Amino acid sequence: MSLRDLLRTISPGSKLLRNLTREEAYGAFDEILSGTVEDVTIASFLVALRAKGTTVDEIGGFASAARAHSKLPCEGMAGLVCVCPPISGTDLAPPLEVASGLIAAGAGARVLVHTDRNVPPSRGLTAASVLEQLGGGVTWDPKEAEDWVDRARFAALAVSGMLPALMTLRSVRDGVVMRTPLSTVEKLICPPSASVLVGAQSGPVLGVAVEVMQSLGHRRACAIQGVEGGVTPSVGKRTRGIELSGEHLVSLVVEPEDFGLSAPAEPELPLYCPAPEGQGAGDNPALVKAAGEMNALVLAGEPGAARNAALLGAALILKTAGRCMTLAEGVDAATSALDSGRASAVLNELRKIQG
Image (cartoon, rainbow, N blue to C red; front, top):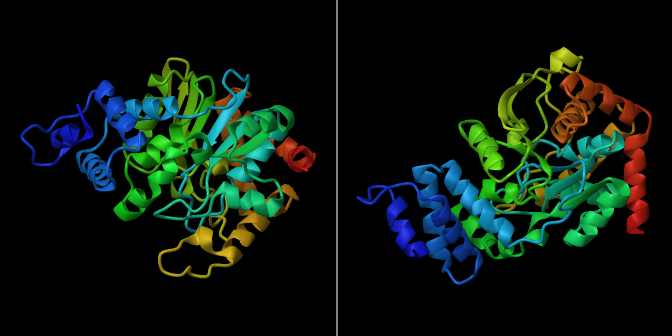
């Protein structure tokens, strides 16, 4: 069935209303990525899905099609964990997944952070902007990302580098404005052999994300409802998550007080200047610079809420990667990697590789 035909089956009020099968979802996204469908039809399809609600089979089919069109790095690489925050970024929360990823790499994990820059409609702060401030860089080349992970244990890769067709969809997502299943699918463009830590918004999407990763063949994964839907846990309250370990789905709770890492407020950027209309936090040079400086202070050992949040994030990465059995062990390993300078050494190695 064509995308237009499938649109009739998922449109609210239609007598044909039903969920798509996994095969139909695959075909729909394959057609979208082919570049032969008008933007208005794609937008209508995404909005209808948002109104109907998406199933595990639908998201799984979309993600499978996206992977089939992508150049995936690091397939079969032992110990790899893909860290997948919202690709459109955050509005106010600093992207501390950079510091967390470097800390986890310093503790022995192989870390691939999925990112991009100025993705609509949010055009938020992302790891790409932060790493450029730190001199660590981000790549659009999957082969280069694989080389960086192999040599430095850390890389940040633009999702649109793996799947260039996403670039042509940016005008569609900018016009739709609301969050659509595309926001979930682009976080799942990972090699099936990798462990995956993915940020999730509040609500039922948490369980759906983990079940989808299980259906895609992952053996280890975690979906976490971090700050602004990211992968960084809160330091002011408990953070909910669901972990996939082998065949089992297990509820996960991150309670910062349990590790002596609570703080009276979440890490906040010291500077916020509203961006011009139609732009976002990622378009604001002063805000991007402040986000980079906050990550640099964490790596330099500065105490405070940002350090606490980054350590919790690193512990989650290490647990998802299977390098520790418990979050407490992960926090200990992360703290050692940070305080010993091994996390900073990863960043220095990355700078050296990039020349």
